[in-house]
Each structure stands twice: as C-alpha cells, then as structure tokens.
Image 1 (cartoon, rainbow, N blue to C red):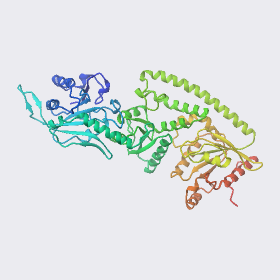
Image 2 (cartoon, helix red, strand yellow):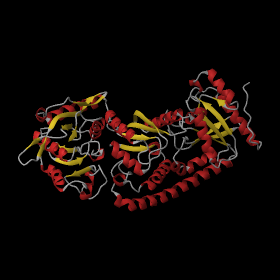
Image 3 (cartoon, rainbow, N blue to C red):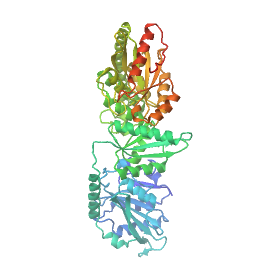
Image 4 (tube, rainbow, N blue to C red):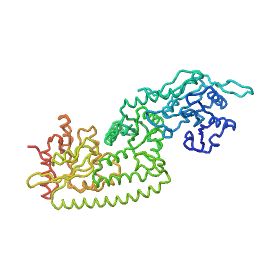
Length: 588
C-alpha cells in the first residue's frame, strides 16, 4: 500500500511531501472508497485545545488502522485542535519539511502535534523520534493498536482497540533531545493538559537560549565536509579549518564541524540522507542558523538541503564573496566585488524557486518566484555589462599609472602570497605605510604601492596585493583581473609565506599554481618565509636546509628585514645593469 499524505486542502502542494505531488485519486490508489471517506472525515473532527488526545479520537484511529490491515496512520493537529494533515505511514514517512512549518525558532515548538498508530508492543522508534525533533513537534503520541479483535458494536463494525499509548516530546536539557513516557492507559493520557506541557517546554527552551547568550544578528554556523576516495584525512581537516577561518572572517561563529566519508558526493544533498538527518538534529540542538559546505553547491542542492535542515545553506564560494563584499572600501574594490557576485549568481537563477532572489534580502531570503526569472536574468546581464565597462576603465587607469612608474625607471616589486601571510604587515614594516592589517583572511583587497628608499641612489616600489586562496572562485579571479595585473606587470615578486601555519607547504603549492596560470613578466620570484618569531629557531634552520635560497624574516619584530633590504638593493642594481639575475646576499 502506498504511503499517502493528504491535507485539509489536497490541492495545496505544501501538504504532499510524503510522496510526489499527484492528483488525490492517484495518491490513494489501492484504498477502498469507504476507506478514503473515513480518512477524509478525520478532517471534520476537532479536539479540545487543551487536550493531547481524546479516547474517542484514539479509538477511531485504532479502528482505521485495523481496517487497513495494520497500516500506520499519522494525524497532525494544530493547537486549536484542528486536523491539518493525515498521512498513511509512520511519522518519519509523512513528516512536514522544516521550512513549511508555521513556527520557527530554537526557543519555540512548531505548534503541531502528531498522533500516530502502530501495531505491536513498544514505543516510538528512532526514526519517529527523529521526525519529531526535525519538525519540533509539540508532542508525539504513539497509539499501540491490537492486531486483531477490538471492541465491536451492533452490526459488527470494529471500533478499534488501543492497548496503550506513549507520549514523547523534546526536552530543553543539554545532552538530551527527547523524553518518552512509559506505556500509559489511554484514559490517563487523554486527561493530560497540552497547553501546560507546551508552556513548560517553551519556557525551558527560552531559558536555554538565553543561557547561550546568542546574538540574534550573528551567524551561528555548522561546517560540513566530504572526504572522497583518494583524499587524506589531513587534507580534509585543513580544508575545514580554513573554512572555519573564512566563516569567522565573515563575522560568523563556528559551532561544530560535521563530515562524512563517501566514494563521491550525493547528487541531491552532497552527503548521505542519514547524515542530512544528523545535520538537521545538530541544527536543532545547537541553535544554528547557517550551514556551510566546503564545496560549491548547485541551486537544487541548496534548495533540497534547506528544506531538510530548515536553515540557510551556503557554500564556500558564497562565504568568500561575502568576505570580499565586507572588505571592499574603495570604489574599485566595490565594483569588482559586485561583478564577481553577479557572475556567481547568474547561472544559479534557474531553479532557485522561492529563494531565487538573494540580492536585496541577503543569502537565503525569499524571492519573487520563478515567474521573475527572465526579468532577473536580463537585469543582471545588463548590470554585468555595465560593471565590465567600468572595470575595464579601471584597468586602463591602473595601466597608465604603471606606465608612469615605468618611466621613472624604478623597479616594481609585488608582494604575493596566501591570504593572511603577513604581506601588509611586511609592507608597513619596510615603508612605514599605514595599510590596514588584521589577523583575518582577506583583510586587504585593494592594491597599495609605496616607495622604499634603499640608499641615496636606489629605490623600489613595493605593491601589496590581494591574498590568494586554494580554489579561489573563478568569478573573483575574473572580476579582479585589474587588481591582479599589479602582479602580472611587476618586475619581480616577493612570495610571502606564513611559516607558522600548519599547512604552509600546501599554501606555497596553491600560490605557485595560481601564479603559473597567470601571464607573468619574466622577472624573478623570491621566497620570503614570514612569522619566524613564532617558531623554534632549530626548526627554522631545518626548513632553511630545504629552501636554501629563501629569506626568513619576521615582519612583526623586524627580524632579518635588513637582509631583505639588501636583496632588494641588489635587484635594483642589477636592473640598472640590465640584468635580472638575482643572487641572495650573505650576511657579513
């Protein structure tokens, strides 16, 4: 017999999630006409608002369950006692998606309770309790129905017989999700006050939320990763650690990290269905309002995941774009960030449905709907075209500035490296500039050029550039071409590396890979290991053996900066001799 879910308004697609939306007669195929009528008549019944269940209502469900040869029935009621949904199947099979529930919030219950039937002994199973938690039901009442027999009235029609009942509900207690009662006589359960139970529970959830001192404006995120075959555990940990830094740089708080090992990503949800349920429960337990995946998601995956967990779902690229939007201060930076955001959004318009428009109300907000798709697409395409023209004008302006600098015969050295490697701190230490520095990812977006006097007759121009990142979104790379040209047109590069980072070798590889993909000038690259003041000197000497031509400095303390200045002076002298062959100077 198929799993059937009907509502007070059968044509309303919100109440047909148990199976695909189909005409009502097809949904109940296999049921006899009188059985269909009995299910429909449940909507005409109304329970007292202050009662969990009545004996008469429970017996009627038991009768129907026996008549359906033990098929479970799940009935959902609101706090007014009205039946709003009837499903043939367990609570897990007939559950309402989180985003369709009428009440949302970690301090509140949904305002809906479920009365379900089952044959045989035993209380609700793990799946039923999980469905209760995912929907934040006021209560889950499980009626244990006898397999045969039951009370009979004149005429032989069965009225059903309920052996006992179980009451389950969520609990506002750390480390515990729910509480299940012992088997209760139906008459005892029918006397319990629903309003008193709900008030007590929601007061407890509010106290629990207050104790967490949650800022309602702050993003409370759960990170999700996927370890595929061939990927090491260390690589996964590095990616998730970096994702956590990105979320924190965007102003969010990381609550917990969840990951799964699979041969490949699930096409619908990336992770498996069981792990999605675990994620949804974790969202409930921790009061999270954001889920962040460590890989790029398709619009359909975002929609499916948001329906399953009930909160906004974003991917790594969206977090990076959000950071860039926050950091952009100059007109040039804002232009390039907006272009990158629109280029990211355009191919993701189709299929977004209720969340299609995310420009005005933030990530995950409701949009105008699919009927606005073409209008949105044309508007975005026009805006992208205008932004491209302005970015091209910016590129020509910066090219003129570079030509002016080239006319002065002063060599230009670009500081490149992974984000948060200390490039801006190094520029400040060498040139006494006042560039903004912070221990966060992408603290600097706009290039800054300062003159460094090396002697009475020698000088170089140092340019601080935007930091690199593993798998930097291609939309950002494309939009920031005008900025990245400061790297491609430089006479030489100083590749700054944060030697104190656990994955410094992986960061070197990531930056070199990005540089190899750029049309760089033929000038040299000098490797500069930064932040050695945080490390054991003996370990630094071991690294020096691996990279004998590298420089080891501390921009924060000024250690070995004189050696870096002598290297730059030697380069400037070599340029005047029309030679770009650098030799690392030795300490006297």
